[in-house]
Length: 142
Image (cartoon, rainbow, N blue to C red; front, side, top):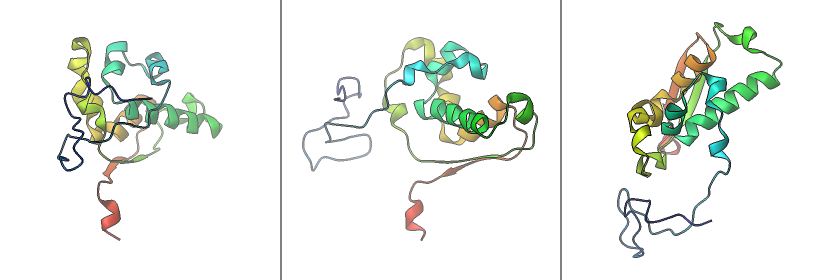
C-alpha cells in the first residue's frame, strides 16, 4: 500500500538530504487495516468524536477492553474499580492527516498523547491512576 502524498499536506520530498520536521523522503509505510470498523457505541462515544480520534487511541480502547474481557472480567466487574491504566506513547502521524470539517471539533482530545490513558480510564469506568508516559527518546536514558 502506498501513502497518498497529496493527503500528507505536502510533506513528501524525494531528496534524501531534505529531511526536516514534518517532512519525509520515504514513499512507503506500514498501515493498520480495519480501523474504520471501530464501534464507538461500545465506549459511549459519538460517531463524530470517534472519527476525530487518533487511530492509536481507538486501538488502545479496544485492546484494553479485550484484555479485561479475556481476563474473565465483565463491565460490572471493573466499572468503578480502582484499576489503573498506564500507557507508553510516542509521536503519532495523526496530526499530519487532513480531517473532515465535521471532526475538527474533536481534534484536541482525540489526538493529544497525554489523554490516551485518561480516555481508557474514563470510558471503561476505571477509578485508579491514569498515566501516559512519553516514550520519545526513552532508549537514550539507559
